[in-house]
Amino acid sequence: MRREHYNEQNYIEWLKSLGCVLYLPLSEEGDLQDRISGLPLQLTGQGSMVWDSNEGMYKITQPNSGFQYVAKLNNGLDKDSFPDDNFTTLHSVKRITNSSSKYISTLSPQSVDSDTCAATSASYNNTGRTNAWPANLANVAYVTNNDQRNRSVYQNGGLYNTYVEYLPYIPGNWVMNGTGFTIGCCRGASQYYGVQFYMKEIYLFNTALDLQTIRKIQGYE
Image (cartoon, rainbow, N blue to C red; front, side, top):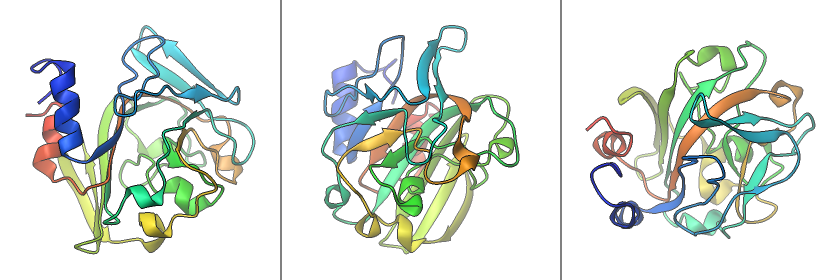
């Protein structure tokens, strides 16, 4: 079920019915709008977020200072927006930086707590380390299912692995210093400074999606 087959409004309503609370297609130059709240990302001037027409994606450059971030969506979401302590994130990411000592940071709750910032960020092979990511575009998903006390990592339409839940990542345990979500948060360590990657199609749900639904959203079915 992609927008190619359904008009955008029907697609958005379907996403909302699944518990979608944030959807940033980042589909073209100047498109910074969250389709759920209708609000745009606000660029901070730290790092950068620039459209690359060759890739058809935004090129993200993370800032060079701790707990700065590239952009923020002031949509009012906080940990109470996840009443069952479940969430799912989906991203399409293509690395640029390729290093064992540098880490990608995609979507984060507004926070200066390292675990909270990491909770909703994209990973590949269960790590944000840049050299773990493939050179080509990767469609990834991360699901925290508090009902089952586990978390699952999906990539390119399949399950990578399922682990026991990590308590600091559960929304009820997030340490937020405001509402909303950020892009490219550098957390508190230099391994995030200056990292570059391409990104599009960011989703956040307050539910634990199953693989079939993830595959539909990411275009595998």
